[in-house]
Length: 159
Image 1 (cartoon, rainbow, N blue to C red):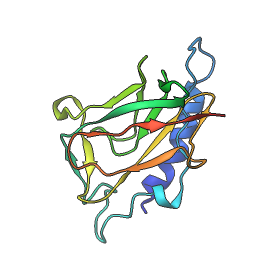
Image 2 (image 1 turned 60 degrees about the vertical axis):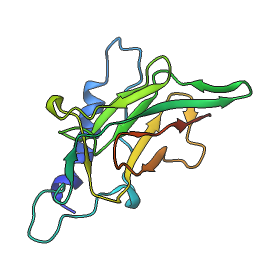
Image 3 (image 1 turned 180 degrees about the vertical axis):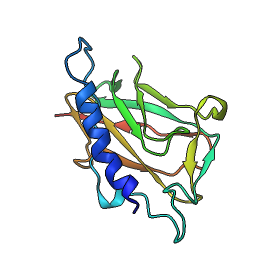
Image 4 (image 1 turned 90 degrees about the horizontal axis):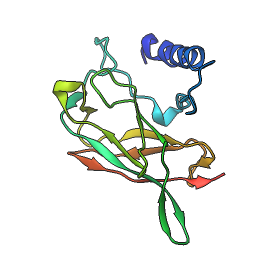
């Protein structure tokens, strides 16, 4: 794993902490997901320096709904935050669910969209919303296989 990747996560957390304080913004400040062994992108092949070597920025999108299951059916979670490390030309991208719980990572390469892919490899997606947790684990992460425009819905449960 490159030093750039190891240093990037704490630096990102520091920047989010410094610039997320003191405003009148009613939305919670997104926090980067924890680094876990399964979430770490494998190191690049020997002799290469870029952690994205082997990946191809592909013009595909990822979208879906963040919801809570209720007795009357799925209820969208407006304002849920969805993080995709490999989405977007510059990577490390957040999307916010709209009033219908819908999030979208664009596949429009001309406008900085797309997803960095390796055939057959799933990518980690983190989902969070104030007052909710992931029903299948404490890390709020899911692994999604993307091989074209992909829809992936995420359920959260109240804390």
